[in-house]
Amino acid sequence: MADKNIQLMAHLMRRAGFGATRDELELRTSKGYEETVEELLNPDSYEIPDFDLPSLLRYQPGF
Image 1: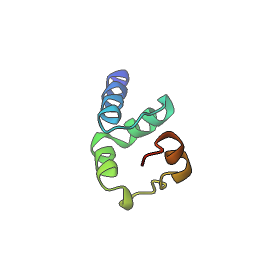
Image 2: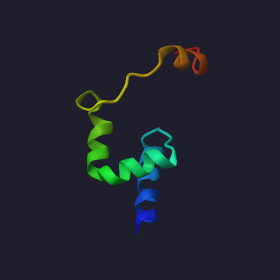
Image 3: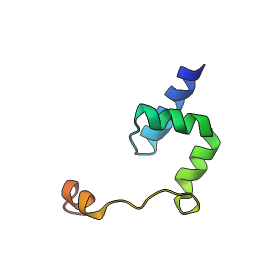
Image 4: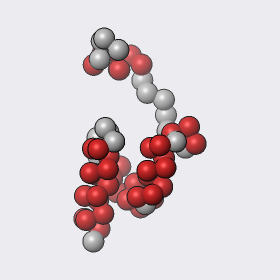
């Protein structure tokens, strides 16, 4: 069942536009699907770091 939950979380992260390492997927799976969705929808309510502007501009120069 754990592999099924990790696959479900990996699918969520791909659909949301994020990639995730196996470690991140395991962490998010332990938090739960609903909490992860809330975290993605309300990033200011959680300790999610801001994106790195220089890296963004490096890979998306027209941004």
